[in-house]
Length: 114
Image (tube, rainbow, N blue to C red; front, top):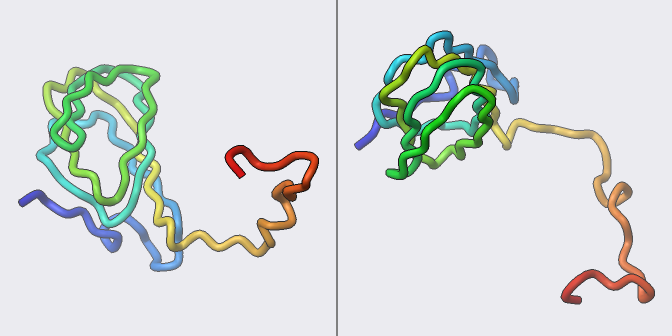
């Protein structure tokens, strides 16, 4: 069973949808899951990122996404520096009606597959 990183340890308030965790350097870290999703930006170095038992070599300039139910780890790191943009999808609140921003279907331009 893998380690679970909780929201309360990374988000300073229960209503905040986003937090940033700077890892400079990012050490090797054992397999773990989160109660949140994250976008990772690699600024420097390289290493091995294991995502759901699949190894990926990561290096400066890489950007990747980790879902809240993914299991991942870092290994064989070499001067690895990254930022984790942590977010809770259920905490995003937008006060607008998305349907007003999306194009409407018409008989002249039916949606693909409709």
